Length: 283
Image (cartoon, rainbow, N blue to C red; front, side):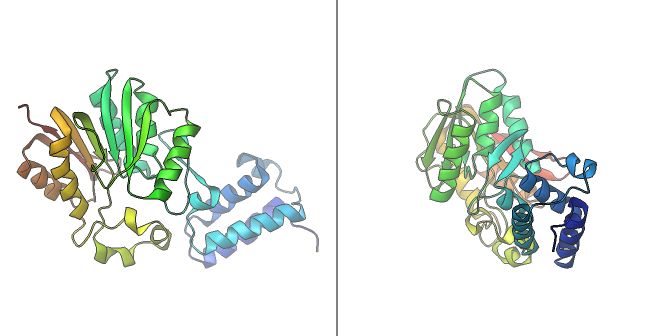
């Protein structure tokens, strides 16, 4: 049997993904075939009758099979774009989300062109730390995570974006190994209530539980983070925390109880309160 053309291969792949209830079946098929062919997606529509080689077909079929089993596209490709930068991602690391770009925007508004000491807690792939560093060249960042797998990927991304002099990567349980007198603490911590994990999309369930589960009410690590931040932030320093769509009020109350001032929650592009920020009172 001769290898199929691009258009036939895409049609077959789309049907397989649709039968596996992958909603983005057509798009994912095109992305994966373009990845195999090492070409831009638009080429697939310019040369739809081009025949695949046996090797290309075998690789494409294998990738479609992985996607049909609900493996996240980012893990299959080994990368994800975040804040207009490409990041290495692997199983064992949370995949960066577009809504998390709000955290970076808010930190950059605070820092401007000034020097600053910033810590990114639960750095995962290092996407937040790298995006801030790229856009705030006088800032020094500490990228912290408790996961050795995550830290290995963080180091790869720091190296990839030539940020070794600007970012220090450290193993740490929240702020345990963070320096004192910080200007900003930023974090996208695990905040999903444990009981909600089994109901998550199959793709999300393939991401590390350590990066998803926030304990019984989703706020276990956020409580600790806020308490520890009071010890590590300098007076007038800022804390910014990403959280769930229905957690803004609870996070505000935790910050208020810890003595923070200027507390506010910011909306993401879907008009969901996604990040709550506050300032440590001047002493």
